[in-house]
Amino acid sequence: MTHLANKTIWITGASSGIGEALAKLAAQRGAKLVLSSRRETELERVRQSCPRPHDVAVLPVDLANVDDAQALAARAASYFGPIDVLVNNAGISQRTAMLDTDMAAYRQLMEIDLFAPMALTKALAPGWVERGNGHVVVVSSVFGYIAMARRTGYAAAKHALHGFFDSARIELGHRGVKFTLACPGFVRTNVSVNALGPGGLPYGKSDHDIDGGMDPLVCAEKIWRAVEADRYEVTIAGVERVAVLFKRFLPLRWYTAFARRLRVN
Image (cartoon, rainbow, N blue to C red; front, side, top):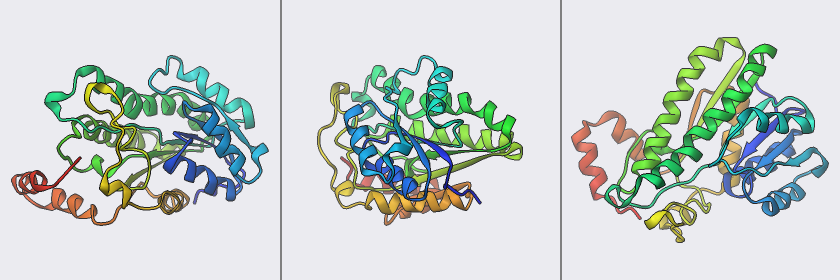
């Protein structure tokens, strides 16, 4: 079991949505927090909304440009000591078809959704192995299992996350490093508004499915319960779980026909 009380937890993408909810619930459980995102003002708002704000530090960072993950990890550890739990939550989605998406947009998406979690985990992992204790939480998506139109880069990044962290678990799981992949479905966040739209600009609109999705606090509670239970993986979804099951158990041509019929933004 992983208990959050008195743990030092570093959460990326903590200025809103699932990351903000994870921060508030972890603070309620007695953790010390390092919160990261690009928006320092919003991080400070989240810090002030947590119990015991003095146990919460703000570390602004643009994960599209992680030049020195080792130095960044050292800064995170400078507030409350070594990082016990890393939550790779920051991410960006996509709302463009493959033929309309240039490679610069794909590279930006991969930097944030894939390479930044890899880099931060690699920076912290040697210390975890040395101490024989550490936990990395990866907020993936149901798109780590399935594919849909207008999500080519997003689905690719999430599938790659699973490959990387499943392999890392095999290498380090017996050396005290724990891995939990959380795969939410639709959650009421700004993921659609902030997604990459035409020309690489923010999409600027919220999807109907996102608007009707799960409350971020409900999602965050399910994630922390999975972490506390040392679960390898957890799917947090409603009706979208059907697509996951279809992809897993139906012939691929059937799933492809099913996905083509879905209305996606």
